[in-house]
Amino acid sequence: MKKTQTARIIKSFPFNHLNKLILVLLYCFLTLAKAHGQKHALNWYFGQNSGLNFESFPPRVLTDGAIIQREGNATISDENGSLLFYTDGSKIWNKDHEVMKNGDGLKGQWIAAQSAIIAKQPSSESIYYVFTVSDWQNDQGELSYSIVDMSKDNGLGEVSKKNILINKNVREQISAVYADEALNVWILAHEKDSKKFVAYKLSANGLNSMPIVSEIGMMYTGKNRYGQLKFSADGTKVCSTLGGDKGTTVQLFQFNQKSGKLTTEITISANGILDAYSSEFSPNGQVLYVTSFNGTHLYQYDLSSGIESVIQASKIDLSTTTDKKSCLQIGYDHKIYVSKDKQNNIGIIHKPNVVGSACMFETDAIKLPEGSYCRLGFPNFIQSYFKFYKNMNNLTNDQLIQEGHLESVTFNIYFESGSAKLTEKAMETLDEITRILTQHPEYKAIVSSHTDCQGNADSNLKLSQKRAKSSANYLNKNLNNKINEGIGYGETKPVNNCECSDCSDDQNAENRRTEIKLVPTK
Image 1: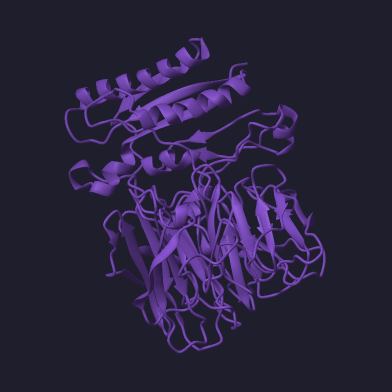
Image 2 (image 1 turned 180 degrees about the horizontal axis):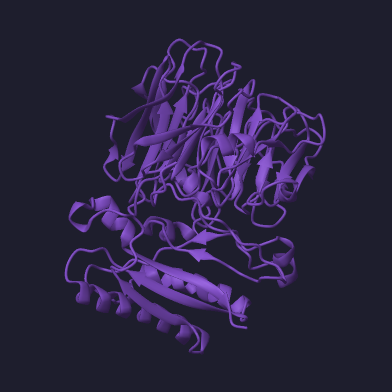
């Protein structure tokens, strides 16, 4: 794996009495800082009348859902965590658990692994796109979208457009991630009998029906192939699982959020995982988990080396029981949840950033009430929702230590061109860091700011110093102390090795960054 900014895998450090080190890294889009307060993935509805609400930890079991779905489904909440609607890909239910107006007859299917995914149209307060895919065995293999207008029917929503065809030759997989600071969204699918990934961009102007095509990876042939696509939360990686074969069934790719292109394939399963079905990345993107279709195994891979053979050799099976394990999905609490077909309990990987059995896989972590049970699928979300660490307001310091570490999270502070004045969004990010430091006064923040190599070196240095100082001063004012430091490095510490005159726009953007590192004061 080429170690560029977009592909770099960052290690998290344990939070315990020996080292007490928190690492807060800042390499993400402004959109992600903006989305930090959003709780679009707070509610889940899935399986046989099953649901979870992540307002508390562990999540509260929901029993009011109307969904009965074998595989793929999707749920969406507003930015405050209030349920809006959910779907099995064929019907849409509103927050009152009734079929939404014009909300039936969608093109998603009962046995499509990722039957649907929901994305809010950027810059809109009421328009949501519901993307659906049909079953792999369906000759049509349609990727379509329907539009939900939440301003209709007294806020319950109405489907205003339905089943608009985008691509008539895709398999039953679909995933999504934010594209940029404007909250544009990439919708990723894969064509059948082809090596082509197709990425469609949803923006404030609607959906661009002309895809970005990446012809990479294994050839997908046959009608009995199933599985899922999954983005890492930071949007830099994509995992493809494709069962029904003993050969290559799990592959990893780098993803460029700006261009929508996939590059650098790594085959995860050298000898094949028969019936590979679902995958999920750890919050820090260093660890990958894989299940097979109703299999008994839960595989873990250490991705930190970026080397194919080393990743393959790191494979371990975390299973200690023979119960079936189907779908994997990261939660709002940054734990990974494991569905079990036709069973009324849910597994949890409590510390997914940790390699080995210390990741603490609990096979029967949540008990569902009588009449509710899992099927093969959990809700499908824009994976960028899980970029941010869990809300820790209700956790004590002892509980935080028991978690093993505070999640390695990423923020980014952006400034207007040539300015060191904090923007509103930058202050929101610093307010969140203030809260962490308030809870942990034994730490201080080291703020460092960097520029690209464009312009005058002395001017770049001075600008970076001003930006770092303004960020540190903001923290010190909030915390009533002067221990937080701001350091500007100008263009002296680039994250890539391009010659200045040859640096691309993307490489220059990688070098323009502000970092905050929390370190012990003692």
